[in-house]
Image (tube, rainbow, N blue to C red; front, side, top):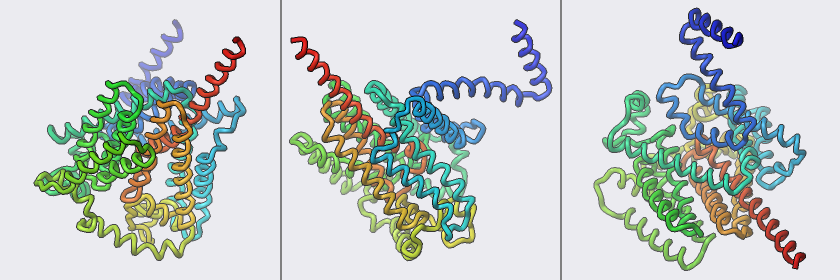
Amino acid sequence: MMMFIGCAIIMGYGVASGGATFGGIVVAICVAVPLIYGVVAYPKFGTVVLLLMAYFLFQLGRIGVPGPLGTVMDALQLLLLLALLVNQRREDNWALFKGPISVMILLWVAYNIIEVANPTAASRLAWVYTVRSVAILQFSYFIFLYNVRTIEFVRFLFKLWLGLAFIGALWAYKQEYIGFSDSEMAFLNTPDLIALLFINGHWRKYSIFSDPVAFSYNMVMPCILCICIIFGQFKAWKKGVAAFMILFCFVAMLYSGTRGANVLLPAALFMFAILNYNKKVLIFSCIAAFFFIVLINFPTGNQTIVRFQSAFRPNNDDSYNVRKKNQKRIQPYILGHPMGGGLGSVGEWGKKFAPGSYLGNFAPDSGYMRVAVEDGYLGLILFCTMMFVMMKTGINNFYLIKDPELKSYCLAATLIVFTYNVANFPQEALVQFPSNILFYLFCALMVITKRLDDEKQLREAQSKQLIEAAV
């Protein structure tokens, strides 16, 4: 009782002297302490919080939630990584860091750390800001690989992801047919954003995400999972929900006006047909190809569809030609700098920390181009090797897995990783939340599904041996 009285006295004095600020700090502490404990003590809870924060990060900022939300995300990932290392030390099982993908990620992180010694880097401070996010994001692969241990949790994560995708698509429909909210209009009320997002009298939609590009990519990826569900051994009602989600998310994606996203679903379907070839898939692929051919060539005055069609005629697109010229112009620099210009030398960090440098005002407009310019051709080779190892692991595991459900999940994860790599060519697909988190989740799921299948096959073999021994 005395403790509660003491707390009440402290609260009263604090609010009287510090006002609402003191009360806000107390409330924040009351929320943060149990949240931190939950993240560290319960890895599944921490994983779910990470995904939720990645999805709603920018929307929270737009509605006025104070504080450095990006730093909060970094802290959340560090807490999960700390919990992982503590548990690994207790279990003394470091096999987590020995797989092909794990080795390549560790090599990539090490290379980016070595970049601090790059003699051609214009700013060491830019490296400090950039390497933080690069390293933390890469290690999220290990967080997922450790925390996701059961097929039930895999199912839950897919359901959660589809639910979040539905919310994102629904918000885009709201922006399209009802309009932007006051906070969204305040966000858009800058000359640069108006020039970028107001095209031919129509606003490009970005839903709850950072920009239309991130929004469009996060509409394509759920479609890929739903295609795998339709062709997998799932109940009819689940396939019906998946078919609805494909249509719902695909139309929402068109509202983004992102031409680079329009080619992603056909690319994913092409890889899907190669990996999962059978009569049913062949018929579906032919129908899908016919649908896209009609949609690409159908005469229309609808600006959303016109912009979709222009993605398949890149040579007629002024912005594409400008990007192509910029990339051609920078090629001699890349060839002459094996380690590139240093992390953070291009884009926003380049403008901030090295505004007068050769790379300071260069806009990479491509994830691969950014790697080539910042990390050099040596870094690009290492990065492409890492992506190749990821794809090879996913494809091998897909063919090795015996359980039909896990096989479908592995196929979906592999196709999504492949599609993100395709998306990383016209845009920087792996830098914004939630795509940067989801990419490493699906990389981990390619390995997790094989691990779960191995465990299931081992249990079945042991049960069979026990039955035979009893007989």
